[in-house]
Image (cartoon, rainbow, N blue to C red):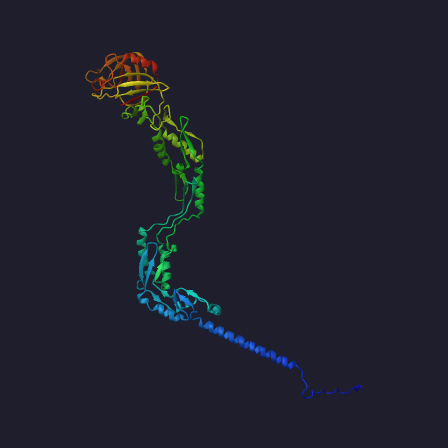
Length: 510
């Protein structure tokens, strides 16, 4: 039956479980968690202790499988390795080698000393002790690190002298610049070039750095070479090339008498360009003048020059002017060098590609050929060796010829050789010829009368009739020649006078 609880009565006390009955499980679960935490803490502590021990060990001992400059230092204390490195300091020497450079440096030369503690720290600094769990199984390479000290002034004195001597015969570096590129026909940046000369400061600094690690074979690399002061990435060079190319618009044709005679190429123009210290390009007028003289005037000027040609009968003739006494009467081209220089300078600076007619002081009938012949088919040929005169017409056909007598060779009155033209003093009728005044008599050496006067050097040397002669040709000129004129039989002189005209070319040769 239900038990009633009286109002105001105390509740009944809890009853303990009977012996053998299970108790409340909550207290047992709490104790298990505590045990697990304790075990975990112990394990973490052990791991931490092992890690710290490893960290401590590898903070002064090298990892297994570690090499120092190729030598095995596995599990050796850094202090021991450092002491070993310092052991041979008194006899230390370093061989310093580069591109053609070689010298030996003794430690005593530079007061080489060694800080074993610093060296050991530097070596250990190349391995990460905190990562020993990962690194302990790997292979490791470390290099000699600083520990040695030296007298910087002594190093500079000893090594600087050797470098200075070497540099006297070394190839110096070449600065980047601009230059004319044949392939592109334009100015472009020309890269700098390293030589074999050493940069003293860089070399001494590098050697000093190696000495602190007691490196006994020091090989000098490119970083020790003397550097060009201007490199190809200099923006000023690109701008300078651009400015120089304003002269390189295109080639300029040259004409002579309306006929193409040559061409001024961009390559040629580049040889007239001068670069200053800042690589600014200017047209060097003196170089241009020299080119006009040596390449145009020397090539195309024919007045007074030796010419070689083949006469229609097949004889090859070379004719050269006799000195310069008859220069004003000689026939041929003469370049106006000043005018051509000015014209080319203006064209190049303006970037013009228009053809330039070579300005001349004297002209000829034709542009000179390879032998410098510059007259056409029509001309008068006076052969001094043959003592014979020929005239050819516009077609090159022989239309007249005759024997002659030229200047007396024995008396030094030789007829001048060269290329001339018949001039406007040409005359017929009673032409009076008067010789030079004889100082003794104050009278002309001779007075002669001719009917046909065809002068080609001033009004003094001419083809003319000579009625006082009965024979022509042969060797008469050797002993009884004229005073320099070309004597012809009367009838032949008349014929020639009827055929020739002012401006006809006259070639006198041996």
